[in-house]
Each structure stands twice: as structure tokens, then as C-alpha cells.
Image (cartoon, rainbow, N blue to C red):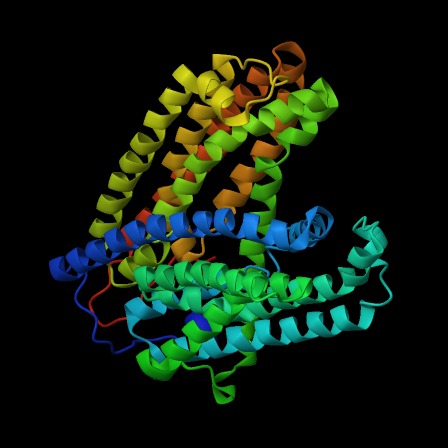
Length: 481
């Protein structure tokens, strides 16, 4: 069991008393304000995601008609490669979010400016290095053959498409940090508005490119460059007018700050990779044990529950910075109260549609897929996935408390134990019970490993804060990452 420790002063700052203008711990006005911001963030997250989901529905028919089947498929193949690199910032964004939320609570503006500048310097350098490597290897890698382009005209566009898509992805690595800065300062609604704007801009640009008779590569560029351009505009507006003190400056970059961010970020990165492996291994195991048709059926059913897991993420993510700021201010009562409410809210909202899928899931499948070779699915499979979704919903608010102070070891232990236990259990139950056995194994192993880790980590944060009350105006203590 890892012992609670007093956190070092953020990123190389000298420890000691910090004079701030924060309210006293437990200030009712601060708690009410934080709750209002949290509610607005949750609602804006849901609304923004609806816009984000609608944008591809509008872009797809326009782009498909303009590009043709093979060129559109080429674009999607390249997009899948960038999708595999979602952790390309090595967790630095999450590390910055955690540190800034705490510094907001303690009021250490100069330290926050150094964190922001150092994060932009790190990810900017990484983005430039990867961009240079992309350009240097572009003509050495047989992209047309790797992407399966058979039409000579499509093959001729392959490298240009790769360059455009990967350049947009790499440029967005540092540009997307503005979202973490806004989240850390509980400007979640503002951040979500900009992200929704990025989705809308992509629709407008693709429509303009298609109707204007632009070339195929320009149509793709219009779709993929919208998000980094909007993130750039968001960052310029934020740092130029809204919070000039945090504007990235070379003189604020500190090597010790960058190292601290990198250490914390790498831990978030490794945790994300471990959780991703656990959550995405089912298709491979089912294909090996029951065959690819069974894996396809399971994947289709799992997609029906994907909206529930997406809801869990959207609703609980704003808790991360809010908890960090509340703990830094010593408002432990708010953290306890809101965490309990969010556990009940998340579980209840997920349980209702989960129950509906158990009862009418097959009817919805027939209406949605309309495929004759999709067999009826056992209600037990729906029930197992519904229980698993509820467990995810219960654990998420508890993890947001741990993330807010960088306490990751209980999560590592839980996910690692889940991986070791789930793989053999899923293989055995898949062979003996079929697809429902895999879903039941997911629920059982999560309940035995990850959920206890969530509870233990949450209690550890709360116990550490309770044991170390601090007067207003002193630097916050925290559980060490």
C-alpha cells in the first residue's frame, strides 16, 4: 500500500507558505459557484458531443460523392492510423490539467504560467520533430501499396493525403492544449463551444470545397484542418485577451517544470494504454475462440453500449479540474458531496437504457443493422454488458478524484489485475457459455479488480486531506502522484 505524502511544490517551486486570495476551506459561496460551473460544463459537454457526432453524418455523403469510393477509403485508412496515435502527447495534456487545477486553487499564477509555457514548449518540439520525420520519410515509405490503392490516380494522391492528415494531427498535438487549460480553469462550457465550432467549421469548409470544385486533396484538407485551425484561434483569443498572464512565453519555460510534467504525463499515458488494452481485447479473444462471425456480432452489440460509456466520460470529465481546485482550497465536503451525487447520477442514467437494451435489444438490432446474417442475441449478453456499463459509471467519479491529485497507482494495480484475471476467464467462459460468457467475465473481473481500486484510491485521497487540514492561505497538500 502506497503511503500518502505531502506533495512537492509544483514543478520545482520552493515549498512553503503561499499567499493567495482564495476563500477559506468549505466556503459555501465557492462551493455553489463550483457546482454551477460543473453543471454547465456537463450540459455543454453533452451538447458539444451531439454537434461533434452530427458533423461526420453531414460530411460523409458530401465527401464520398466528391472523392469516390476508393479515394474515400484511402482517407479513412489514413484516419485510422492517426486514430491509433491518440496518446501521442504522452499524457502531457492530462498532466497539465492536473497541475493547473491545483494551482488555480492555491492561486499560484506565476507557477501556472511556467506550467503552460513548458507544456507548449515540450509538445511544440515533439510536434516539429515528428513533422520533420514525416516529411523525411514520406517518399521512402510505399504509402500507396501500404494503403491498398489500386487506381493509379488514387495512388498518386496517397502521399499527399498522408501528408495532409498527419500534418493536421501533429499540429493539433500542442494546439489542443488550450482545451486542457480551459478545463483546468473550469471554463468547460467555453472549451466545449469552441470544440463544437471546430466540428461546424469542418462541415462548412468541406461544403465550400465540394461545391467550389476543389481538388480531391483539398476536400480532405478542408475536413482535417478545421479542428487544429479552430484550436489555434481558441488559443490566440484566450491568451491574447482572456488570460494574458498565462500566455506561453519562452522566458517562462523551465527544464524542471518540463521534467515534472513529463513524469506525471507518462504515468497518465501508461495508464491510458493499459486501460485501452483491457477494454479493447474482447474482439481479438472472441475471434480466436468463437470465430470472426461471433466477434462481429459482439462488436455490433458493444457499439450499442458505446453511447453509454461516452455519456460516462462526458459527464464525469468536468469533475477532474473541479475536484483539483476544491481539494487545493480544502473544500473536502464539496468533493464528498458531489462525488456521491455523481456516482448515483451516472449509475442511474446508465442503468435505465441498459435495462431497455436487455428487454428490447434484439428489436433495436434488427431495425439498426438490417442484416440477415446477424443472429439473435441472448438477453444474457445484453445484461452482462449493462452491468459492466453501470460499474464503469460508478467508478468514473471516484477516478476523477484520484486524477485530480495525480494518484494513479491504485488504478494501475486495478487495471493490471483486471487484465491478468479477465483474459483467462473470458477464454474459458467464451468456450463454455459463448458470447454472454465474455460479457459476464467483463463485469465480474471489473467488479473484483478495478472498482475496488477506485474505492481504495478515493478513500486514500479523502483520508489524506482529512488528516492534513490547512488554514486558508497556505499551500495545499496532496497525495503524491
